[in-house]
Image (cartoon, rainbow, N blue to C red; front, side, top):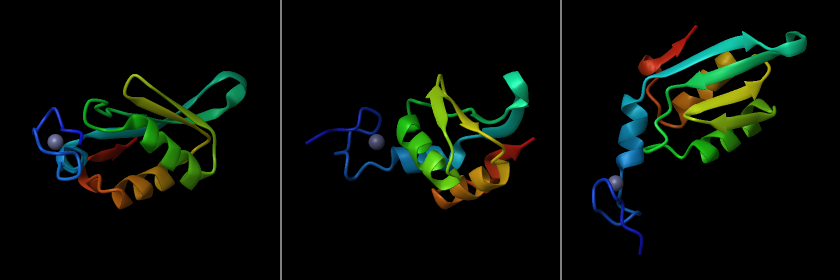
Length: 101
Ligand SMILES: [Zn+2]
C-alpha cells in the first residue's frame, strides 16, 4: 500500500491532488515559435501536487495535438486556449483560477 507523503493517508484515500487542483493558479497563453507556429502554454502547475505527465497526456488527447511537459509547464502545439480551459475545468481545476491571456 502506498502512503501519501503530504497527508499520510493511503493513496486511495488521499485527496491532496484534488485540493491542489482547486487552489492552483494556472496561466494559459499562446506564443509564436519558430516558423510562426503557435504553441499553447499552461504555466503554474505545481509538480509536487499534480501529475503533470498524466495531465499532459489528457490535454494532448482532448486537443488532438502534440505536446510536452517540463518544469511545471505544459506546451501544446497550436492554439487550444478555450479547449484547455474546458478540459481543466472538467478535471476539477477551478475555472476562477485559470487565467487566459
Ligand atoms: Zn495526500
